[in-house]
Length: 350
Image 1 (cartoon, rainbow, N blue to C red):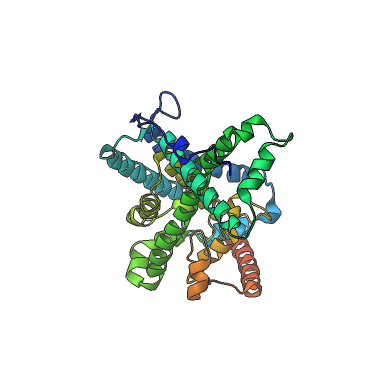
Image 2: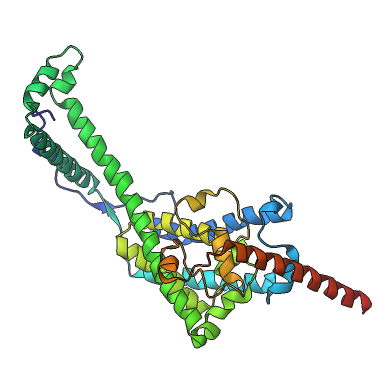
């Protein structure tokens, strides 16, 4: 690393903090954060409803229409009312929390990037020092290279090195760190939901009082993924979001990305479609097929995970017998077909 670049050259001036401008003109980021999860939910649901309406990709459906009619204990209209109630309550809570939250400030980013650039410079110097202990004359090599015709004057003066270190620091600050925060948030939310979800299935009172409502959908569909008891929704879903955001120190905009992904994934995992490739599944190990087993009467004591199969596998609650699952699915499809025919015959007889 060129010795002409000093650590102090990355030090930024004193911060001048000011309220962060809105991402979209005319809509505050706070208001946008309330809109994002609902918009993500219904836009994703619209995609799956379109597939259903036009009978597209039917070979990837986990269940038949007969199964939805015969196995679900509520109608789509009842489910819709429950989903809208949950969204109203969650948005209302978000409004109340927003009243007590502080305005997010900006203006510190240059200093933070400079700190990372300084760290990178220091680490580079330490690496060169370590290499020099091996007997390689690093400074002599740098001096020779700086006189080479192939090396520009900007590199020899340290200008190119300064830009490279600063660019690497920006990648870390604006890219790597937010990505790691979002990924850690998925794990925190997953742990929160797993243990509460498992407790709900272990305790009869908790299950009957709160969680049984969600399992009125044995054959789930995308927008019904948040059909929960209102109290459970506040504690389980909102709780997971708060733990994830506070636990990782997300900014408001990062929390929007997280809430959008969470909403999209909830729809995807309850969609009833198992595609051979789904971009949402690139970031987690729980997909629609995995979660659908949990909604079946023969699998509701398994597959409690939200994003990752880790806790299910560690504690032995994953339904890993694919052959048994295939046979049970086939049995249920046949039973639903027979039940639908019998129901149709009774109506015709009447």
